Every structure is written in structure tokens, then in C-alpha cells.
Image (cartoon, rainbow, N blue to C red; front, top):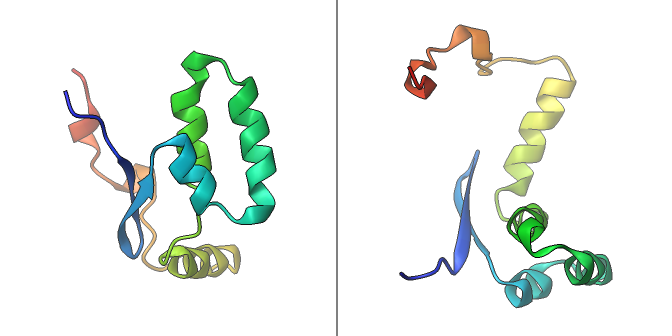
Length: 97
């Protein structure tokens, strides 16, 4: 079975591919965050590594970050245009039964 070489996150600006190896994530992080990343990885239980790596991969700066920040700023300012609330959507596809 082939292993994933990247995580794919879907953001406002489209999909973003992020590294999924410890080395790849470390190298892609801003230098100021690398020591903290190393410390967390070195002390993590094996079972906790997948979630820890995903969380850190999401901290890697991406081209779409500016678009995401604009949406957050707009919502914080009270402009909810284009926002769909969960109770307004048909999420029947999630239903297991």
C-alpha cells in the first residue's frame, strides 16, 4: 500500500497540499516554530503522532491563508454574507442511518 506524501486541506482558495512527514513539516514551518514542533514530536506517544502532525501541518503558511483571514475578519466584523449555518444546510449525507 502506498503511503501519502502529503495532507490535502480544502480552504477558501482551493485545495492545499502540505507535507506529511516529520522532516517535511519541520522544514516548511516558519523557523520560529521549529523548536516547539521538535519538542512536541520527540515527546509524543506513537498513537498521538498522526493528529499531532496534521495539527502542525495546518500551521504551515499557505497561499490561501490571506483569503481565509479575510473571511474570518469579515465574520468577526459581523458580516455573515455567504455564510451557511449548519441548521440551514441539508447534511443528510452525513447520516449513518
